[in-house]
Length: 179
Length: 176
Image 1 (cartoon, chains in turn purple, red):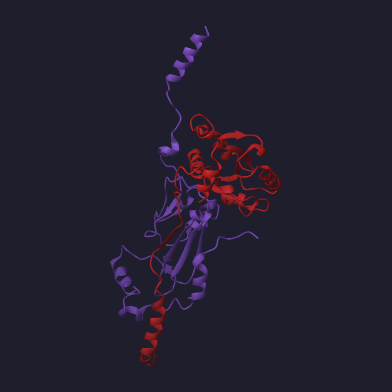
Image 2 (image 1 turned 90 degrees about the horizontal axis):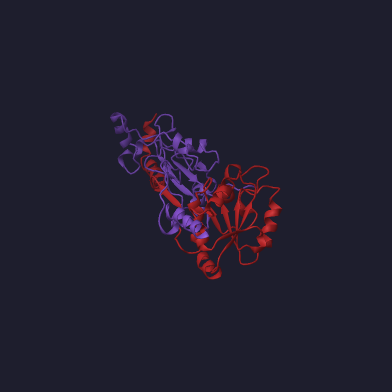
């Protein structure tokens, strides 16, 4: 009698086969729309700071070094991968990658720093995006290129407040510490 | 380097003590999920034990809250040397959403020295297995800090602009 029950058990187990994943030796794909580590496309980013304003865990910090340089730092150690930054981004510069194998011994491995070059309006001096659709605006943007020697005269002096000491300090952008 | 050391030190089965320091139970469920037959970490010899005195590895989940802080420290001291500590989840890694709340210490690192961090809210069971495999030296680390620039900051531009102005001082006279 016990033999029959054992055979029954073996048959029961044989039906589904091996269910255990051979995970660390073979990759396991994530489900569709899985939100892993966010990725910033620095070609698309316009530096509006919407992601920094919307982040519930305040992982994204933005600091203006001078009028034309904005430093964005993402501190992934306390990120909850909610995807609100990707939702709010007007340029779709942020994508939630399916990367989840992020175990590390150092918290700084999870951070991402991005230096954004902000163009400024000739009239008001505020920052704006490089216009790409309007061809008249495109012509004006040529005059803004800092490497064009002829056009340097027309570059407005919006960067008078550039402080090289501030730049040096923000090179190793510290995460805010609790006192 | 740490995985090389742990390869030599932890040659036998790892016994794991699971320490909840004020987590929302999301990470705890994922840790229990790792022990199920589907993920089955017992093939690496990992076993959950109830007492920190039996354990080699402590899994901390949750940003260490103020009431649990002395208990976490006591549990860490009760573990025999050598010991590994894993911070599971975003709360244990950096404090999560409440990293600066009045009653949260802000990550397991503030309470005890943590060897490996597993970010995620909650981390996938695979991510926890990956951390264990990283500690055992089976896989390589996958993340590194990213530093990108849209444009090199033209610092020389400011100096050259100034020189240009000095050279062309005549335009200042023409302004009037």
